[in-house]
Image (cartoon, rainbow, N blue to C red; front, side):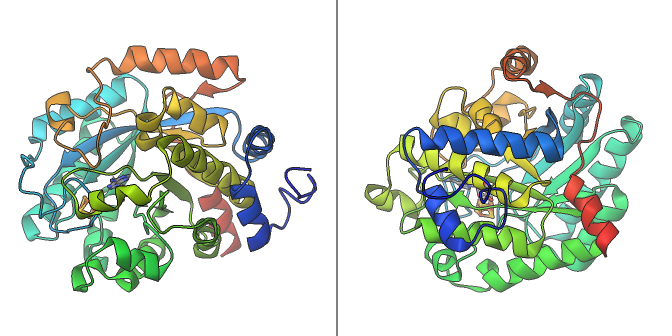
Length: 363
Ligand code: 5AD
Ligand code: SF4
């Protein structure tokens, strides 16, 4: 048994109530949940952890999400856009060090200059790295034409978090206007799938007013949308955002961290063969948080390879860890920790989502 649920059922056909129960586990039962998630992870995606070198391209954003430190309304942020050479340098670093993949993330813009720039950067990275790096984009909601252009240029994965699959909760954390339209976000996810991307989504965990039922529904949403990748992490308040004022409603950092790990584990158990990232927000709330995320069932990490002077301006929430530029020694440490747990880092491999290929076989 894990909690009140027989062990054989966990891993089988979990219903909403079961998901809620698993997300509400405490004490020693949590370790049993993580063990089960590890078992599922090994069976379906193996014992490797894949890397995506994370490039935070620009912190300029046209949107105003209530939780995010780089929202357009925050006038305290010094805005940047990496120079082309800085991007190529980071990409070459990832290439030379066998990272296998890149993730390019940016605040959301939809002007022509931005769209052209992303297309150019993807094309040029391909040329400079022998088309040998997988490329994930995370540049928000765009038109189908834009998504298609970026896909044709060489991006083949796209991460667009739904943030919360509950429309009601979504509206609490975003302005109610055309720029922050829940249905448009859903439409974007559908477009990305239609074009042929490996598609990822995710939510923030531990938001004010969020319940275990909301989170169970988020996992069922992942399942229903048949996504290939999940990127999710605990919500962490940022002082220059409207939601800072609601911080009194939050559970402790420790509780939100633990809930983040349980979300990873339960998502792994239900979705099985998807890629799940162990995100920076976990590392922010706990020492070795990224490792703990992997041991709860995640199989992807995103080492930040943005030049540190800029990474400190890509501040979505308080206490975001900034690497001192010594990415490799940190990875060596992680690799050793992984080995102690029967896992290891994968080098020179894209680490595509197994689910994507299964999904395409079926269709
Ligand atoms: N806490 C945690 N995650 C955040 N994000 C933005 N702001 C915060 C925050 N305060 C996440 C969102 C977004 C991604 C880029 O970062 O989920 O999709
Ligand atoms: Fe912009 Fe993304 Fe932050 Fe929203 S979460 S304000 S879209 S960077």
